[in-house]
Length: 65
Image (cartoon, rainbow, N blue to C red; front, side, top):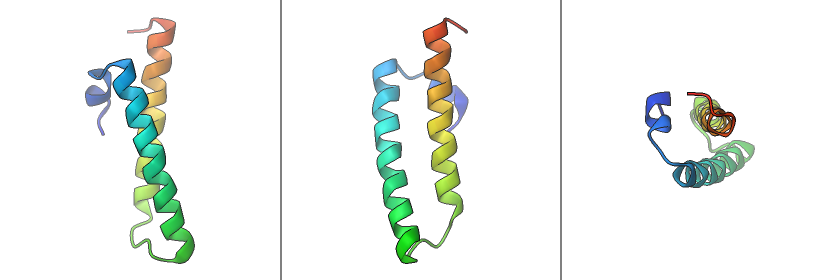
C-alpha cells in the first residue's frame, strides 16, 4: 500500500485497515510457524503497511500535513 493511498482514507477507514492487516499478520505468522509460508516477504510487507498507517494517524493527531 502506498502512502498516498493511505493519506486519502479517513480515520475510521484507517483503523479498520489496521485491524484487517493485523489479522492478516496473525495468519501469516501462523503459516510460518507450521512451515506453510512460501514467501517470507509478505510478513515484512504487512508490518510496514501497519507502520505507515500508524504514522499517518499520528500525523493527523498532531496536525501535521
